[in-house]
Image (cartoon, rainbow, N blue to C red; front, side):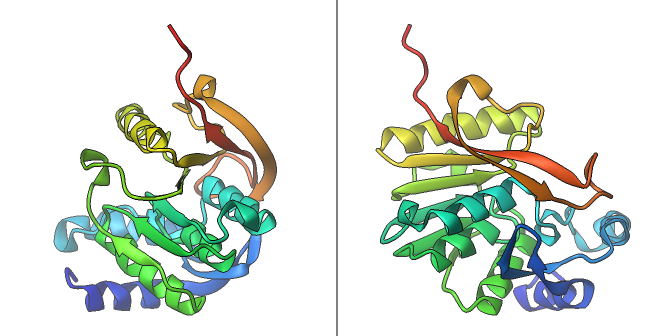
Length: 222
């Protein structure tokens, strides 16, 4: 299952095309039984190299970003948008639906890359997809960088923040969607909007997550 067609077949067989709870204008291939798929992928990991299926769920940060973009399309209209750690491709699809000139979604998980392509096609939008660690590269050419739910582990949070700062320094607006993960750099963020987002209870600590959309600010002087 290491080729794209095999990954697509796995995604189709283990998910259902469903409307996103907080952005029902968009449908994604989602895991209907969260724990079943998560357990299956853990059991099969050694056999087929399948990482945890983050791409199979509409996480709170992504839902909030998608809703914010759909509600304020002027944020993206005619602009170049880069969706980092895209997972299902939800935010990228929302940006395209809201009128972005071009959208690129990136994720290091090959299954996410396949899922993003499937989901973009299901929503009849065009999204470019990159499947590598872009944080070790020069900032992408974009007007807007969006990052949903990326601050849940310390090493990743530090790495992502440093890279996002480099993107911000090019003049791009950086938006973060987050429901209060442990390593959210609150002192660097300006709150723009708050949403009550329905999530998968099996993977979260509640059925509704109060989730913010933030703008990344420059570090304080001194």
